[in-house]
Length: 159
Image (cartoon, rainbow, N blue to C red; front, side, top):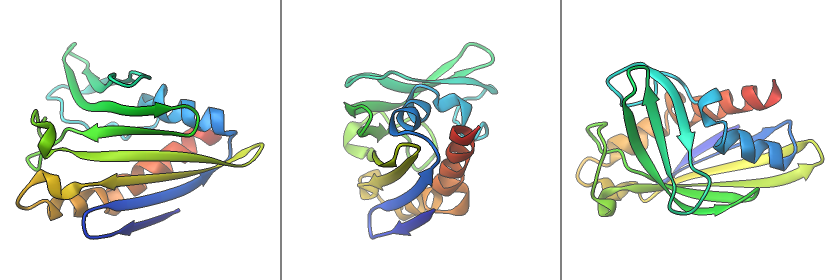
């Protein structure tokens, strides 16, 4: 696993022990099975997550109290090779409703054999978050950011 930050983006990658189709499916349709449960912006406890598998779909959290929080829009969807979602979360860790102030996450999947997939994640355009955007870059590029999420994803794929 590796992570690298550039000026306005964070790139992370990991190899997982699974065919490309399974890796893509677990990352998207089964996102709630691996996403760190304390990484959400609901007021309630996290009950589950939904990734709507189509351009124009959303990614959202569901709380144990029935509340929902849409925090991403599906911008590109090309199974099992890649998808792009918006990151509609502001520097205050609340939903950002202005698309001009949101960043993007692209995840690419490459088959490395029948049971091995290379996953590359790029969280880009972080400067769109405005003054202080470096805090977002530092947060998602930290050990508790995408590194933690991708490690949890790899563990889930392997189980």
